[in-house]
Image 1 (cartoon, one colour):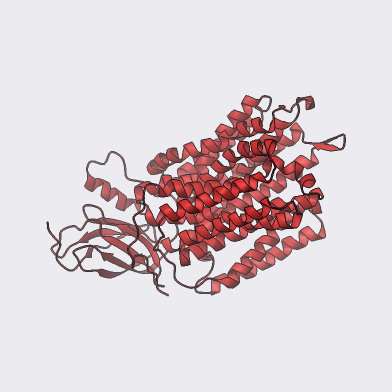
Image 2 (cartoon, rainbow, N blue to C red):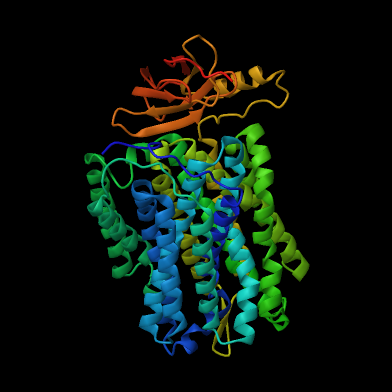
Length: 577
């Protein structure tokens, strides 16, 4: 199957596309944090044992981890908007199932369906890449990437308010309503991308990855209940390792894999994904610790005695600050590159957790911690999709961002398991109830700080980032030249007419040896263009513009850190006014 990125005219993306896609991401986050205010009451609400009630949370995590890379790949093959609507639709069905039952098994089934919404994040990022101009893409992807934290922060106080004053099933009706609204807005506002990857869906690869992920995440989420050294826990970890190794060997041998492991092994992708795990760990620690510290009674000597709703409001700035950092990220990244913003974000997170060790004695101090950590996590989350998008072909955007979102989910899963174990092992038992201790909270913050340190080390290994053109360019021509020079590894040159005059806004598409699109751009006013290459090899540069005949030119890149100059001369006469 050939890649057909522009065979059909694409609808022009309106200014509402970015907020609508970000809203879809916020809806996903709301679904994830929906039950946080009633976690401790779930055994009574579902009339079951605490170990069984945890499956209501675990099922969503597992299905989300499985669905994220799969929906990303399906979006690359069959349409990202189509798969986005499918993800949200499955979530709405799951929310309605949960809203109509108090039976444990049906509730788990409903929550499993809700987990499919996690695919909306990479699909939204992929849609943005396909339809937005370059100058708007950075801030848009930053907002989409941060929406998972924004929605989580905003959902906590609202969910707490609903749970405190209404039947808890109203939470699911609210989630279904938000999902239906997101679907309607997507249908009205968001056009379908015309970008398509070649090949067919790798069903066996999807089954292998799903099995391996479930076998890995299951003992992480249930290890504290089963025992970390129990035969069940260790056996599942061993089975996961075996399945994932076999899956990796299979993926390397087929022509159209679910996940291109060769692309994933590139330093820019590999170290971004490793850093993503650590960012996920750091994000979830504050979400677990601060609400508990705020709600513990003052009689403990360290609890801050706040109500469920007030605690949610004090933690909400975590998400609000992440939203504010999206435009700040765009400016910083334009000047210094996404690697710089990732490192800066992680340094701010480390400062936030380090300061938090001494700021746990008053409610206002929790507010300060939430704001500082929100700024750092917002910068870090915003950097991740830009680093991924800059390192993979356009035809693999959905799958690559799906894998990156999965890495964050693995980070939050590990964080949930480890912090839950720490708080349980350091808890005091009062009247048969386990109460987390200040020592446990501080150890949790230290673990988060260590995770950020590891993530910072991974970020330092990232290749030197591309930089945006300097703001003080002496002329438009200088600015265009700097854009071309910013591509460290790729092709650059000018698109010219038959008479040698520059051709502006010509579509230049880079196609790899397998017929897949590896990049696309529009020429500048002086005819200049620049395209990065994902790897060494032979490519075809296809150019077309109104008033000129199309051109396909072969070119080869050695894969080193340099730009190869290739001018493209279009046949036919330019149309003059």
